[in-house]
Length: 291
Image (spheres, rainbow, N blue to C red):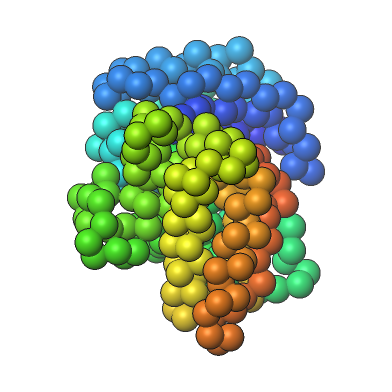
């Protein structure tokens, strides 16, 4: 049965037709609307899925933010146009006329990435470093979402009590420093106003400030991984996202992690499904595969 999988991120919306064997047959993308209105997101989703929805039998959504009882609650409103509450499942059921489920995008990605290595381990954490920093936890072969959908939001743990204010309202979250948005916000002088992609390109050219910004992000993520190892005792941490998968980033994270005491070391790997992990994880969950 074909699933219409949708990935709602801070910078883009993606939709794909996914078969039961996780093969993607067709894919569409649109920019995430900059407007802070529910109407803008509704119209963007409608434009995204209407050309292909007739080929699917169900809808599975992976979205940034907290998903609670089918509603999107934005823990960091900056990452999704200022939305604080959006009836995600209801909206897609009205647009597509198909049964719909929704889950946090990093939780979905964690499930897809776990399936790629399920014959090797039972305890894994997925971290995505992109516009924001998200996470998903698989424990004893089961995806952990929490009673309120908050489980795995590791980007909103503390990195620096004297750091910048995070979009969630706390001070010094990992996301406020390590994310693409955080990297860009810290840029000064000739890099002021540059996005993370540009800063990574400048770092590759040897720009001193750009290198420092990227290194700071990698160091903060390594500390988060050590904390995560202490809490979950996971066997592997998988890294995804546009920043997490940027060339050379994972090797920097690994180098900072190896400087810490051995008890906090854990195997690191790049996301197997790359930028499609959220789409595929949501599709897996729609198939009823939760274990």
